[in-house]
Amino acid sequence: MANGPRYLVDTNILLRLSKEDDPHYAVVQSATLVLIRSRAHLCYAAQNISEFWNVCTRPARHNGFGLSIEETDARVNAIERIMTLLPDNEQVYWVWRDLVVGNSVRGVQVHDARLAAAMQVHAVSHILTLNQPDFARYTNIKVVHPRDVPV
Image (cartoon, rainbow, N blue to C red; front, side, top):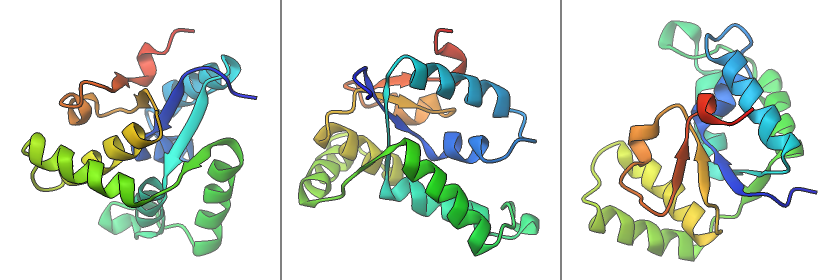
């Protein structure tokens, strides 16, 4: 049973975990295993799975993985087995609204704000991500790069 800090696992981490030939695979896998062994509580949001599904099923010629629905579904099932879904709800929406207005969020960064809102609503203190700058504006979140997970 996980009883350590709660981590949202960003989509870029989920994608690297599912692609062994990715240059970041080793560091991401190692960090994830260390967190699991240290009893951290690993979480994901529905948005993470939507983004994951998008990349996995998009053709390789369009910067995707080109996987079948069945292959993608199997990868999502693996995520669901070891991590906890943060339920989407009305409160997440209202916190997101406050975050995008209060932080002058624009363009594609609205998606990161939605993850930050889910984290706030569900008391998730950390995010494991390769894109640290994307979450720097949210001072209540500890942003952790996989290489910075203590071994």
